Image (cartoon, rainbow, N blue to C red; front, side, top):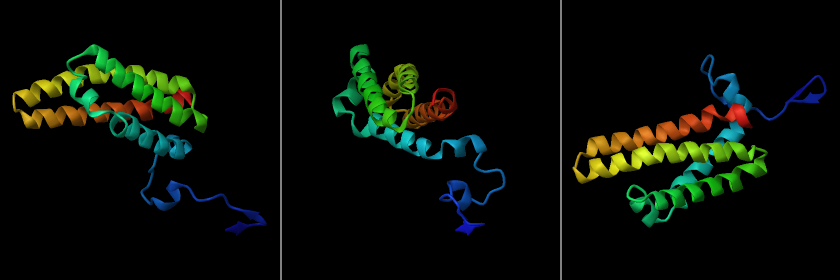
Length: 142
């Protein structure tokens, strides 16, 4: 749309969302990076992980290391071309390892005890923590 002889930039996500104060301005600054980061997390944490890693990472620190190495490598490969500092992906890899060290063991414990509600609660908490750190660290290291 033209105003005073200039072309307005493409409308952002905020243009389409009509809630007062939403989304927060800091998120709008990173909206496309954030979408790509979340998609990259999904690919690196689920789609590109072999089944045997998912099944064994709670039993072996070596296999947990493979999971983290693959996750972090994919995050670097997917995010650095967007101009995101590689330290962002590396720091998230370290945080991811800390979260998965605890959550993978808890999920295995609850699954073997057939405490399925607790099992799913741990998975939900695991993903919430991953996403909270992915979003929270974005303004720090991008």
